[in-house]
Structure formats: structure tokens, C-alpha cells
Length: 124
Image 1 (cartoon, rainbow, N blue to C red):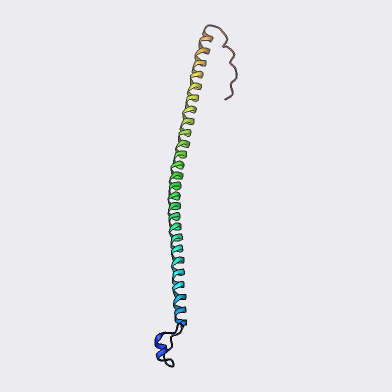
Image 2 (image 1 turned 90 degrees about the horizontal axis):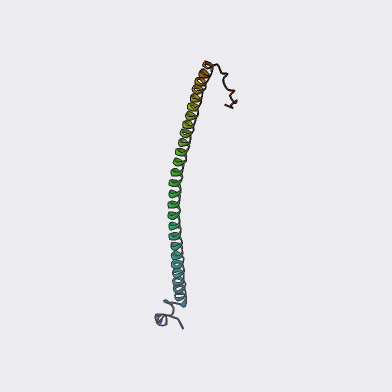
């Protein structure tokens, strides 16, 4: 019998039934279940927060790397342009030297009465 002792003394006016104890147990179980769920959700929230932080760091790292490599490829492109200009200037200088040499050779050939040697045609 789960009837409260005071109910036996005052059966008509003050009856505490077992339903209070049942409700108390239900509430205790609900509290425990809610605490367990809150704990699990907090753990998941912490996990996702750490993952988000890790991903943000990776994103920052990759952004920095992309900027660095973009700057490098632009620098290399510029160096290539400069190399091409240097090579072009070198070839132009060689052409000038050859023309000067050809004129000098032709002049000396003409003074000695010889015909200038036939030149091979060059593709410019």
C-alpha cells in the first residue's frame, strides 16, 4: 500500500495516492533523459565547432598558398618576358654584327677584284 500515512488519518480530505510517486519517477526519468540528450548534443556541438575551426584554418592556409603561388607564377611570367627580350636583343645584335661583317668582307673582296662569295639564304 503506497497510501501516504496522513491519508489513513484523514481518509476523506487528504489522500496522497501512488500517482504522485509515479509522476515523481517519470519526471526523474525525463530529467535524466534530457540531461543525457543535452550532453550528447553539447558533445556534437563541440565536435562540429572544432571541425569548423579546423576547416577555417585549412581554408586560410590554402588561400595564403594560392596567393603565394599566384605571385610566383606572375613573377615567372615576367622573368620569361625579360628573357625573351634579352634573347631577341642578342639575336638582333648578332644580325648587326653579321651585316657589318658582310659589308666589310664585300668591301675587301671588291678591292682585291674578287667577286663576293655567295651567301646562303637565311630565314628571318
